Length: 147
Image 1 (cartoon, rainbow, N blue to C red):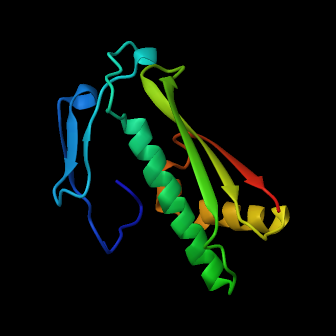
Image 2 (image 1 turned 180 degrees about the vertical axis):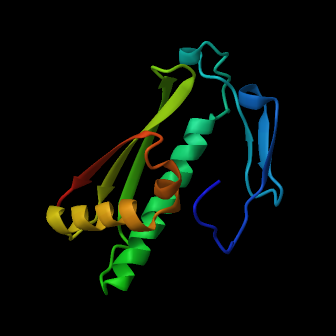
């Protein structure tokens, strides 16, 4: 159990049937995806399907970008043009089972590399809920491109 609690601002709920070779949909129907295990993982790799890693990467990238913009606004700066690319990998862990690794790439047009790096690191350490949820549980690499 976490050492803290949150006061929920919003809750998203999704239902999956069939696991990685099934279907996931949010209860408000804003997301509806068919899933299949990729051929690289021994699955059928069906066309027009996605994976949990794709969904995680999209969510983390969006959350991180929004958190950076939030933090920049607090600092009276503009990071609204930032591009965040989240690459999520899945693989076997040394201790058994599977784990994920994330490489987060950040570019903020017009910002120096030093300023963009400071914002991205502060976002990861203090603001982004995905970063809080995964800290210490996944391999995480942050790359920042300067102007």
